[in-house]
Image (cartoon, helix red, strand yellow):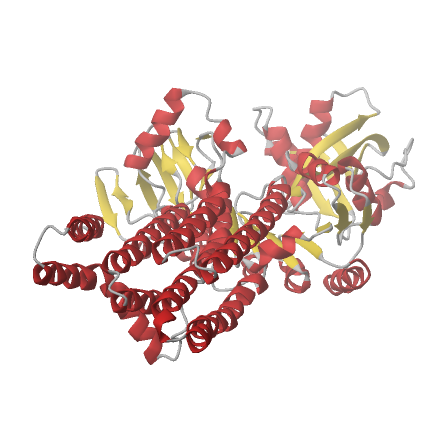
Length: 634
């Protein structure tokens, strides 16, 4: 039988016994027998925890208060109230456990993204199901419809679309074709595809995400520590107040008043239970972390929610953080009679033997036209001491390279914005701009931070003029370029000393010192290096800069809810303590008040977990919702 059903049966028994007592349905001895049976059944967990706490020297806790209150009620022959205390307390604990369980679901559901097996392609006719640790790089795997992608891989046959929400927070399915990379944890939503493994499971993004989740609650916030310390002092004070409330009036008015003041003391003990603080405040943080995890933001500890809520500055790395970290052809300045495509063909042929990122980018740009390079046109190929290339292509002398090579070239036009120049037969014909591409949502993310009054700073090892260009394009208020890793850290430490709480966002190995030393370090989870991710405090699983403002807003909302809960709990308890002290609050009403404020605090904490998200609003069609449901069920 499930715990829920057992709990319901226990409640029914307690209510039946209370009803029998109230209407005096049976003989006294039988009623007392029923009472003590139901009393120990429904109160066993309370007494078990009270004894356990007492043995560990922590007896001034809510279980101790409940035990004392019920035993005192029995001493006063208030059997119905003794059961009422346990009933209300157990109901409160039940709903608290239920709320905590539901808040954990958003994180535990992420654990379900871990694949369990891979379909290894032995040959075209044989598929073998293997555990992930037996599949290696370059192995070929089959990913069937509705299956999870088992390992990071690249498709080489067929195409499909994939549900990526559990891992990256993206609401819309992602189309994937041969050559596209898939991450472990994606769900195949259409056709079976074949793919080649590019990373072992332990190095996959999903493995890193799961490790972050498992450590998310290890660090406690200063406010949580405050609540724990508060309870240690608060509870003994209330216990002694309750003793004085019994002893002093009895000494003054005589022993005949003992029962009256004992009942008031017991009511005071019950209502003073600090469970609203002990449960409500940590739950608020847990709900915020759970909410963040649902949209692809991984917090390594709840302390960073508090820090983010107070942040006023975000410092960004450039390459791989605000930009894609990949070169792309931005512009061709054509000064010849040849077409742009012909110029790009000669440039691609000249660079075809190089593995330099710029050369690879140039070849890739030409191949986008669908035309293949004819390498037979290359007659000679000579490197010029790291400055460029001199080639004979299609009976033409092609000079390609840096500006320094072109001082004596006819009709040369200098241009500081260009980084590749080309001459044909010693006559200048074109210059090319190849640069890193800005991520699609970087501008949106920076604009949102600016609108929130958060100062943005760009810090990069790239050339000062290129850093300035990116900063101006994105609307970043200040910048510094040409920084080595130690210079980045020196700048960050100086900035933090002058300006206070600072967030740093980066992705590379050279960003790790800044990620460690910043008040809050945010790393890119997809493109980011392992060292950057390990040394950060928050990880953006899908690398979206726009989610930084989401982090800060979530942290600010969490801070607001925490203080709402603290003020609400203090106010209700302060009023209830006064009423209990003057005899206007019975034991049953006291436990009802304590349970009620705890439930209110819990519900308030969970508001942020169940509030609508922008990503969820993008689920516009019933068909797509059904598709997600279908994928999740497999």
